[in-house]
Length: 188
Ligand code: TYC
View 1 (cartoon, protein in one colour):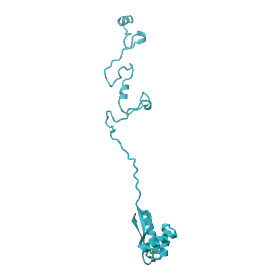
View 2 (view 1 turned 60 degrees about the vertical axis):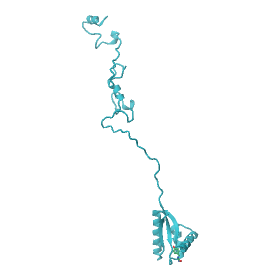
View 3 (view 1 turned 30 degrees about the vertical axis):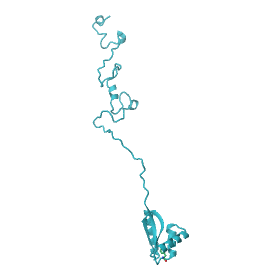
View 4 (view 1 turned 180 degrees about the vertical axis):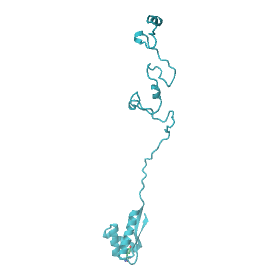
């Protein structure tokens, strides 16, 4: 029976048009027309698929929770810098290269020197070397004799702050005992 005959027997209603189920008519669902429109449903998509589904998957905009389900349940968009840029999109093609080479630098070292004079007692110089430079009596005596014979001698090597502190301590201690002993530092 044709649609026109059915319409006549149905009293003017249109069983083949809108509102008629395909089970009742026995007709095959029409194939969707492919217009080549990137903004619509993909070619061959199931009829009834909501418009816009394919379009959102082809863009790189943020994924938000929508009626389709939570954002986490849907595939994330590509994270490359390629693709169209929307206004306000601050993605760039610039890569950040981090330097992993250690940039530490060893501190400069300084020698602490004793200077000879004609008045400071030898015993006092030995005591100074023992006390402030942590030397044994024998080593302190050797250092004192070296200074006595050569005019200058090294008591130790330290970082700047430590060397400066040693110099101050020796000079203060000598002054407390009214001795003219001199002490200084130089870069190692
Ligand atoms: N020359 C001093 C003396 O004959 C001894 C002396 C040694 C002094 C070392 C200072 O740093 C010095 N008494």
